[in-house]
Every structure is written in structure tokens, then in C-alpha cells.
Length: 374
Ligand code: KG4
Ligand code: ZN
Image: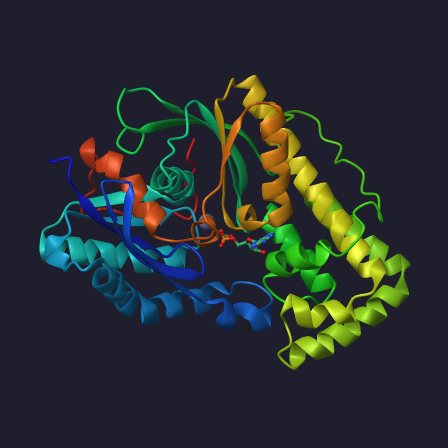
């Protein structure tokens, strides 16, 4: 296989239909993401059946647009990469089936990619774009609405980071909710709309992070595992103990129903107590994520820390990681906001070393709802 390869990536594991073209695992030629947030918002979460239908509706125009923006045609593309899992099975099947059909029709190699490896490669491809190659070994925190997991990342073979396969070991993972899920549930309890992360991120900046004390989760066993269901329940109990907060939530609910869902519109409807609760919640989640990741980085003698997934867009998480990693002399890498959440550039980038290694998939490719990376 020639090393020069432009790969068309397709991603449909959850609620974003995405396609992208990436050159040689390092140059993003196009990246198109069709978000379904507006479809799922009124249900306060992703409805799998609706997600599959939306993928089916969007996949052809999204792939076409990704090709158009890259200035290439399907004939120019050297391979097709598709997310095999983990994710919602009905959603994954749309991308897998479409990718298989395209690869067959155009006689192109097909590469199956693990969505989680995509999140790791999202950080690498953008670091390279900024002229920096993260040094390995690294630890990678993937933190989103569906995942909170820590991996060690190593490269066994010499070679450029974008071309060499990575070896992963799982260091820890959440035992219950993903961090993004906790954000979304807390936002629901407080009538802050869906998804909760971006709004809580902005409102928390206006509150006192020491207003409410949340204890550390008591966990036996692996010290690098996470747990976020306790803090979610603590927020619920706090609300029950303070009926005035629930009253305030009702005014926000009415505002949401009128389509007012931007943080700037909700801020005047949040008193200092609510803002303090949000700031304290965010501080507790961020402190926990940063502390465990940096402890793992030390234990695994990592030279860099990679942080990816929807929650990696969080401002306080970025600032805290940057400050704490600097104190320890560690380099920390985040993707841009666009590549933090689900996208297909990360899938095309992850496929490149696999294409070079000849790891192609055949007609028997199936989607896998559960697919551990390690
Ligand atoms: O990676 P993603 O788009 O989808 C998956 O879950 O795979 O992540 C979406 C999650 C949601 O739970 C959302 O609330 C959270 O990421 N999120 C944030 C922020 N932006 C998105 N959480 C905290 N702060 C943010 N700025
Ligand atoms: Zn994801």
C-alpha cells in the first residue's frame, strides 16, 4: 500500500452523522458533522430509534459534502473508514452498511475503526496540525456523554506518530455514569436544557465553587476508576432540601419552552444559590477527572496527557489540566472544540496506520454496540 493515502471517514455511532477526508493521517481536508441535537432535545436525551432514522436521512448529503469540501471525488479517495463500534447499534449499522456499500461499489479498501481510538487520534491529528507531536507513552482520558475511560497509549514500532499503530491498555473507567451523562442529568434536574454540558460550563463560571460541598466518592478496588452517579444524587438531594431552588427551576422550564436556551438567556433566571451549586458540581467533577488522570500519568511514566470527547470542551477542565500538567512538567493536548465531540476526521485519521499495516476488513464487517479498545 502506498504511504500516500486520502481516507474518507464515516461516523454514525451516536447522534452525529459525520464524514471527513484526511490525508496521510495528519491533514484534514474536510470534516462535516450533522448534529441531531434539535431532534433529541425535547426528549432530554438521544432517542435511538430517531437517531437511526436521522442518520439514514443525512448520510448521503453529509458524505457528498465532505467530498465536495475536500475537492475530491470518490474515485480520488484511497480508502474508506467507518466506525464499527461502540455505540447505538441502529446508528452504527447505518454507517457500516453505507461504508461497505461504497467500498464495494468503488472497489476501495475498507477499514473498521473503534470509535474510542478515533477520540485518541483526534488529539494527535490536531496536535500535528499545530506542529506538535505528542510524546509517547501518553495517558488518554476520553470523557463524553457515553464514555469516561483512561488508557495508556504506546507506540511499539518506530515511525511517525500518525502512521504507527498504537497499543492501548485500559487504566480505569467509570463504574456508573459517564461524566457528560452527569452533566446532562444535572441540567435536566435544574431545567437548563439539553445537552447540559455547554450551558453548565458557562453558568458555573458565574458561581462560587465552594458554595456546596460534595464528598469524594468512596471507591474500593482500582483507584483509577471513576463514579459520577453519587454526585448526581447529591445534587438531587440538595434540590429536595431547598424547595426555593425547585421553584426557580420552574421559571427556567417556562423559558426553555419558549425556546430560550442559551446560557445568556438562562443566567438572569439563576440565583446565586443555583450558580453556586453548578460551580461546585463542575469543580468536583473537574477536580476528580484531573486528579485521577495526572496520578495515572505519573504511575505510567507518561510524557504527555491527551484529553478527548465532548466534555473535553469544558473550559474549567482545560484550564485546570493546563495548570496542573504544567506544574508537573507534563504536556497536555486537547482537540479543538469541533474535534472534541464526535466527528469523522478522527475516524479517517485512526484508519491510516491500519491501512498501512494492511488491516482491512471484508464483507463480513458488522457493527458492535460493545467494543472495548483494550
Ligand atoms: O462526545 P460527545 O459529542 O458525544 C458522546 O457522548 O459520545 O459528547 C457529548 C457530551 C454531552 O454529555 C455534553 O453535555 C458534554 O459532552 N459536553 C460538555 C461540554 N460540551 C459538551 N460537558 C461539559 N462542558 C462542556 N463545555
Ligand atoms: Zn464519542
